[in-house]
Length: 144
Image (tube, rainbow, N blue to C red; front, side, top):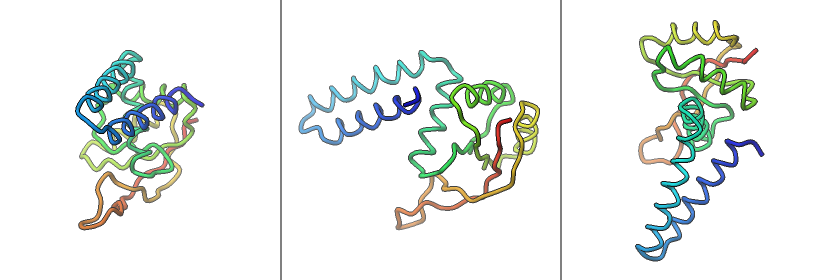
């Protein structure tokens, strides 16, 4: 199991601890566990923390690939792609609709990523009065 998968599994366990807490003392213990876990994620560096947040979102949204859906500062791209390489991510999707999205896609290309096409991904939002995720278009990138 990869490091980020272990971190995600621990996060899931903490959520179960909290949800299964029968009293405030048990909830406080789960909160303390979460605080220590979160500090461990932060201690691994900003690039890892950013990578992990997107991985966590992909898992919770039910996406096959990590989907970069937020605005990304230019200076984040190189570190994020390096994290993808380090942790064995071969493909990711990019669904940001911000005005700088085309420039960001270009920066991915400059960092050795190749656009392969498009697909629909699950967004973080659910359809009104439903638990079904809204579908949004995204570019698919391969890390070469």
